[in-house]
Length: 280
View 1 (cartoon, rainbow, N blue to C red):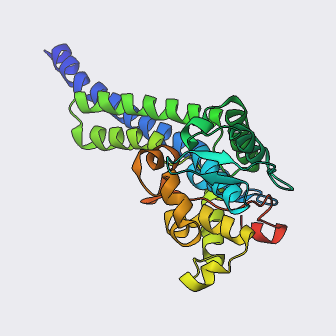
View 2: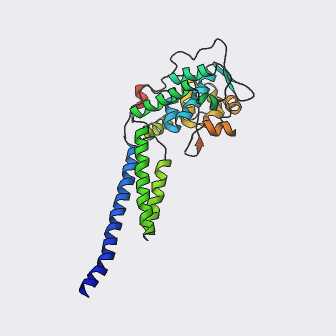
View 3: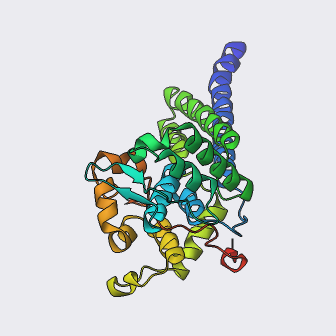
């Protein structure tokens, strides 16, 4: 009887220990996944272009959309009624153009939508180089860290599901939900968040009249920071015709952040001086 009693009591005890270990493993995994996506806290923003700022906020597609508007404002690219872009005859990508500017300018030797231009080999390489540069600056999470973060989150989610199946719904289900949410969060780091917050504070949207006098470099940064609201002020016709304010093209080329579709700009390579990187 004593042996049977001890055996019966060992079952719940073992289950409780295993449940505690599972919770700890899931929580540690979630913390690791979050840190992989969010660190570092400080990054380098010196010499970052408007397209780079756009990529911090919305990724490579947002950067490409910024570059398209930059080229348009520089008088290098125009948009037809069909929404396709083409470069003007005898035009150039401009002095100090970034690799992404040059790649898109070259791709638009024939009429293309922005979505079609995005998949040309040169543009894809330039977009990948831009994201790699941002990862090196500590402003976005690189591919390897994103993959590791996702794997950790999925492993934590699997542990949480096991806990829920074993009867610990109050703990397992919230942890599983958090694990699924981690891969869906933006890839920018805390340094990237700080950069955007600092620049938005320093460069608020101007009024309608002041927007007409905005110089190209400032317009590029404004559109990278404020998205569709800046587009409606700075390049409404181009944005409407090219689909950046709506339609399927916009959904394909405009990354969303904080409830707002992402934005676009002007032809400048270094919209950030060393002073603009303060606090990043």
